[in-house]
Image 1 (tube, rainbow over the protein chains, first blue to last red):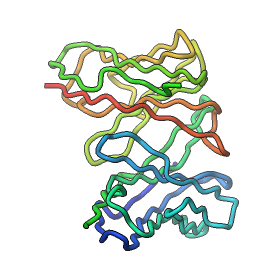
Image 2: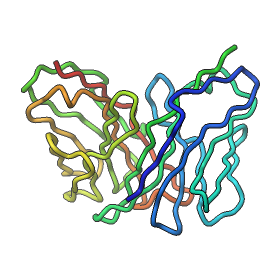
Image 3: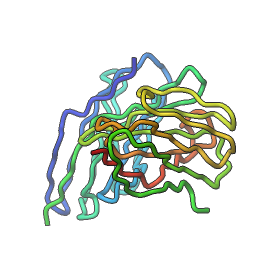
Length: 117
Length: 116
C-alpha cells in the first residue's frame, strides 16, 4: 500500500533563509510522480512542485526545489530565500491508482511552516 | 474559466441533519474527486467519478453519497450528519485519469463543515 510520511509537524525559518521539509514514502510502483502542495490559511490547495520518479534530475520551480532519492524513497522540499508568503501547511502527496482506473492522491499529515520576519 | 467552485463555504449542521455539498467545474474534466481534511491531517479520498454516471468509493465513503448526472457537477450528500464528519471538504477535478505529465490538477476552495 502507498504511504506518505512527513515527520516534521512544524518547522520555522527566518525570512530570506533556507528551509528543508522532509517526506518519505512507500510504493510498489516503479514509475510514479510525487507532489508537494501548499495550503495557506485560505485553505486553497496549491501545487508547488512535482517530480517524476524516472527522472534523476531534481525538479526546480523558482525558489522551490526537491531532493529526490528514489532508492531511499525520500522526497524533501527545499525553500530558498524564504518569504513571509511561504508560511503555510505543506503536504507531500503520492498518486495511487484506484480500482476504477483513476488516480487518487495519498497525502502526508503535513508540515506547518512558519516564516519569521 | 472559474475552475472548480464549491458551495457553501461554511456550514453548521445539527446531528442527524442532511445536506448537499455542491461542486462544479467548467473545464470539461471527466475525473472528479471528493476529499475530506480533518484537523492536522492530509486529505483523504471519499468518492471519485471517472465520468457522468460513474462513481466509486474512495478510502472513507461511509456516511456519504454522490451522484454525477453531468460532467460539470459532482455533489456530495451527507444523509445523517455526525460529529465525526466535522471536516473541510475539497472537491477536485482533472482532465486525465493519471495526475502525471504536464496536466495541472485543480482543487476547489473547500467547504468547512461543523456538526454539532
